[in-house]
Image (cartoon, rainbow, N blue to C red; front, side, top):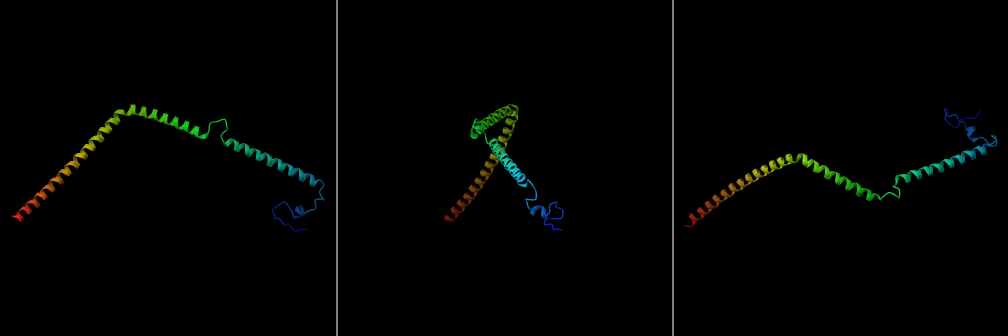
Length: 140
């Protein structure tokens, strides 16, 4: 009994793999049929792959990709403009109210900064006048 070169769970035995091909009649014919089927399958697979690749790329009859992108960009821009116009019509009074509120806040900030600048300026004038008075006193 020959020892098995493959794992015990494998149905193939070493004799099956290493046996003389002359023992089985028509083995060469079966082998060449299998080989030709494999080559035919490979050829069909390559054709299918080429077809799939061709479908991934745009056909030559369609416009170039940059023209399609330009067209889509123009359509999107037009759609956004229409949406913005409609939104402005609906929310125009709300927007005006918000802008008036912002204007009021900016005016109060400006007034506060003017008051602060005026106080700082008057304090400097008082300090300047004190220095001037002190200098005048020293010069006498």
